[in-house]
Image (cartoon, rainbow, N blue to C red; front, side):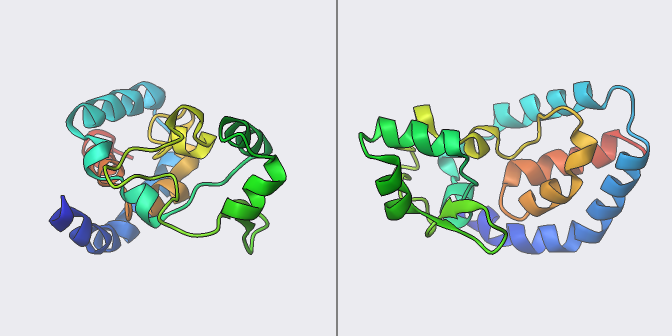
Length: 164
């Protein structure tokens, strides 16, 4: 896995222009069965991919935190929301609430998440490759191919399966 994660950014960079063009075309004219196809590709990829052997998303990127996330997690940790925010979160240059630092402080050495049951919505949905109206997530998906081997593989298989 280490070698794969080391090579992933370079592979994603080599495919970025091609992927951006693909998603531009996909957004202009999405196939009628796109949601079904992407669900199938997502399911098949995650039968092969075990996130616990990777956790690169938790090690290198931080999720956005909604107010509901903050309230839910702080209750789970038996902390006041304001204390949770002060301890773990910051507002980034876009005005989004994000982790103060990565890797995620809730990620264990075994790649297990200590707040998995109450993790942020962005973590539950990552890498967003099974969402409806997937054609609208091109920029995000291309970005995720740099971090998530599964997202990279799903995009490569999409390009083979879907002719735009």
